[in-house]
Image 1 (tube, helix red, strand yellow):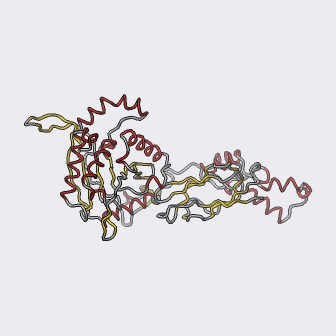
Image 2 (cartoon, one colour):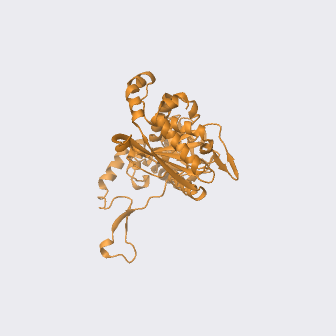
Image 3 (cartoon, helix red, strand yellow):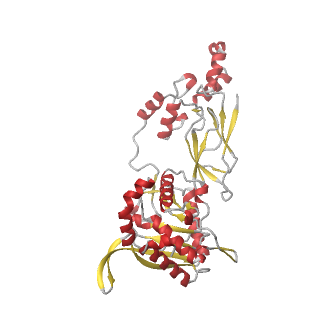
Length: 413
C-alpha cells in the first residue's frame, strides 16, 4: 500500500488561509491523475486541486467548508488501489475460509466499515440528494451502498415540506401574527465576498475619496469602430469593442498626470513608472479586477484579446492569483449593465478609478444648435490626500479629449 498525502497547495504571500468548497470525490472512489479533487477558495480566486496520481481516496481529513492553510493535509490517497473500489474486497478474497466461519467481533466491525462505503455511481447520487451512506442500507458486497439502494431509499423518502430547502421559518420577536412564518435564508459569505467587503470598507476608511464627472461624445469612437470592426476582427481574430479605447485614453491621461497613477505608502508617494490597468469584471463569485500589465505597450488588439480572456476565465472561476495581483489604476464599466451614473470606489492601494457608463443619445448644444449625440458620463474617483482637484479634473478632461478625437491616441497628443 502506497499512501500519498493530499495537501493544500502553496498560497500567495498575501493569502494566509483558504476554504474547502466542495469535494468532488468520496472515500472509496477511484481517481485518475490530474482529476480535480476539490475546489479551494481564497480571498482572491478559486483553485482546483488535481490528484497527484491515480488511486483511491482512503480518507478525507478535512470536510467541505473547512478553513485550511497551505501545506495542510486534507485527504489520503492509496495509489495501489486504483483498480478496486475498496481494500475490503481484496482482504475477503485472500481469506475464503474466514468467510464461512461464524461472525466474530472483528468480522462484524469489518462489515460495518464496508457498509459505510458507496460505489461511485451511488456516491454521486448521495451527494446530489444530500444523503450520507449511513442513511441507506447497503446490499452490495460487504454491505456497500449501490445505485439501486439509493434509488430505493429516495422512493421511500417522504415528500419535501412546502418551504424551500435551506429556508428557515423565522418569526421576529414581538412581530404581528401576519408577519410570522415567512421564509428567510441565511447564507454565510464566501471568502471572496467577505474579502471584497473588507477591502471596500478599507478603501472608504483610509482614502479621502472624491469624485469628478465629465461627459464625452462617443460618436468619433463609434464611427471609427463601425468603419474598421469587420477588418479588425478578420485581421486579429477578436471583436473591436469600446473598452480598449477607454484603456488607451486612461493611459494617455496617466502619462500627462503621473500623480493619478501613483499610490500612498505610509508618508511616501510612490510614482509608478509603468501602467498596470485593472479591469473590473463580474464573476459568479463576485467582482474581480484582473490586471492588464504594461497597458501602454499593448495594442488595441492585444487589449481586446486580454479582456476577452479575463472575461472567460472569470466566468469559469479560472483567474489566477497572478491575474489579480497589483495594478496602478482601474476602470469599471457599469454601462454594460445599464448604469447611467455612479461614484466608483477606489481599489487599494491605487489612488484613482474611472467609472464608465451607458452611452445614450442625448440632446446637446453645439455651436448654438441643439443636436443629438451618443453621450457617455465619465466619473473618476480619486484619493484627495495626494491628488488635487486640478490634476483630477484635467486628467479626466484628457481622457475625454482622447475619446472625442481618437487620432490623439495614435499621435500621442
